[in-house]
Length: 195
Image (tube, rainbow, N blue to C red; front, side, top):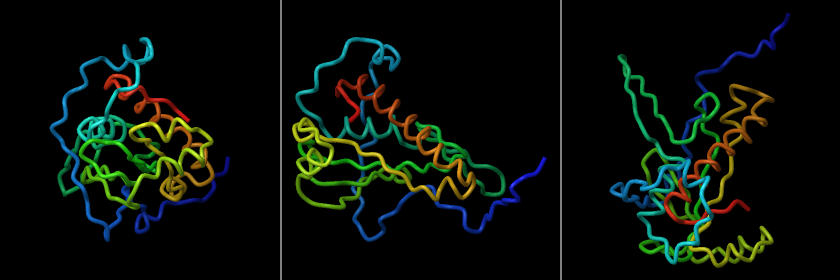
């Protein structure tokens, strides 16, 4: 039996958060209401009607329960491990989250990046981008939703450790986060749907 000979280069280990240092962080509220419904019941139950409105606290809850840092553990010697709502292969967290907001109460229209590390949004583009996103996805309903959450990935975060298998892990990790988005979204009454 042979191994690939690949070894981990710890000095170039990818950082687990994408940071837009030049953009002003917009702190998300942490005092959002707890999810009132068991998420498994929410997923198995009838489709909820889309909420009449979406506010920034509900968006914050959705982001927290799908991609947020849910626990921190510090170890002797200063090591810290961050646990997130969606598991990731190797705890490398290659999936990035963006919000195309158009009608979110308490949030200006725009395209935002969500950073779980400091639980903030950073606006990448001003103005309502839902129409452009709807055209790109060939789905007019996106333009009518209060917000759309978009997932992307930083492939290097996973291939640093897993090489070619990182491609497969990209789909596992994104699928885990999508499952969390659907479960939390239904429990929060946002009537999520995958495009």
